[in-house]
Length: 227
Image (cartoon, rainbow, N blue to C red; front, side):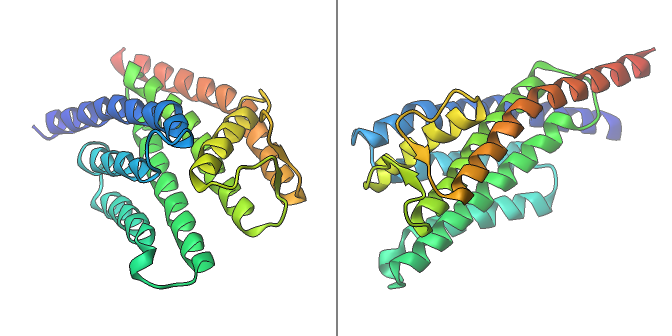
């Protein structure tokens, strides 16, 4: 009975990866451009973050500790977005908001990594999990770039002044760095920004090879167990 319940929990967790991937694709490739054009408010991203948090906590997260971390990180981002009620200086509020948002992305990505690369048979949902991790690398680095743009003078060239347009522009720059496809009109000027972009490019090159090696190992282990 315990073994059956463990298998059902694993299947449920892996199936939740498909829902997370869908929300992530919507956030990065539909909502982000819509926010940049003014068709949607930037707060709409927070709604998608809530959906991501709910799915991760309810479906994917397999321990109470991870569920608590995801919940705390998300609640922190929501509270930070309500800075007009707190009365803190803008720089402090932005630092807290961006930091908590980054923590949220890291925790969700780590939770997905546990499910995607844990022991067990290789399934299509594990591959979806690997795609999620790849996209989350771009999202996490986009958060780091936003922090640099906020607190480093002239960190990037041709960066829009609007917060909503900055989010979309730096996300596109991050995806360009990850895929070595270029950052479009935006260029990293500050040494720290250039170093971070180079690090993301290196990760983008190493990730597919590391992913392939891990999936092959899991597949071989699964075949051995079945024999």
